Image (tube, rainbow over all chains, first blue to last red; front, side):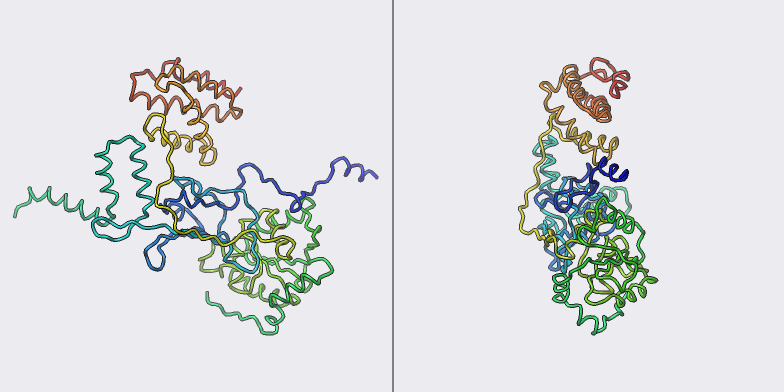
Length: 179
Length: 282
């Protein structure tokens, strides 16, 4: 009888879940929620992900950047959330991630279009990333002429940038070199 | 590692999806769950035992942990299947009565998780034996476990679906306008906030602080902006946020204001003094 009194005192300890929704704690790290409209394809999340749950790579035709996420591999560390410059990946509160019979349901993918280098014409980064950079330049308060100069610079691929700077440096040095 | 184990025909013939669904429909008793540790770090085990406590009580749905695979209907496999646990896993799989439901539990059990390309593991239970249900998580929350097991027996419906985003616009996401007309101010606030409070609370602090700053009428007047910020700080409940907002005002706001005006940073009328900062914790 004493035991029954004690149980009455403390009530029912069992959570109602799954018959009632379960409220997760504050700061709970659930499934990363991806916002396609905010993603600029900077690949920071792919670099940061310790378990390679997020992979960012070119598709087979090499004309689009593909952001891939495999929820089964995710360890919910939140590093993608930490590094994302536009908050496109944020850890949500979804813990109901189990799937039955089809493992493909755990995956998520997104395609982003690529920009060509203005010198060599090779594809090197996403169009959105360049648009985001230019947008940022405008908000920093630079004048139009400076922005145009910088835009030229960011629309060049790293290989061409390297070649350009080597050319510039060699031009400078040729004055002092004996021929 | 290459696949060497082929499921014997007498087992695979009895383990088709229809057979499993029929078992779930016709079963008139509890579901016995046998847990196989295939080289797990024990995090998943702890969560499994957390989810069989009265707090979550899976026996409401008839789940019962058993100590022998010969009694089991559901095999709960944790861990990325290390070399050493390969044969024990196969022995348990073959010993379990047909049809059996195999659950890959945790990030390691479902895909290999952080060990997916490790030399000494198989990278997931489904590389070795056919798996029916995947419960991701590292480790899965007891609620995820309950949900996954309920999905396995068909009480609940699966919520995740494969998502493919395509053909979005090439426009940049919206960047909010800066109060100083220079987003470097917002960027520095974010940077300092993250250094002080980490990415999660830093983001919150950045939001609160920029909201407070943007509500100031005359941003170029440090005396009045200090006063209005103080009002916001008094309303703030968390003392950590109170102190950090004062630091942000002293270090970032006044630094950026200096480019427009000649001000003395140590003037107690415009900056928060040490005494005021200590009051944040009262």
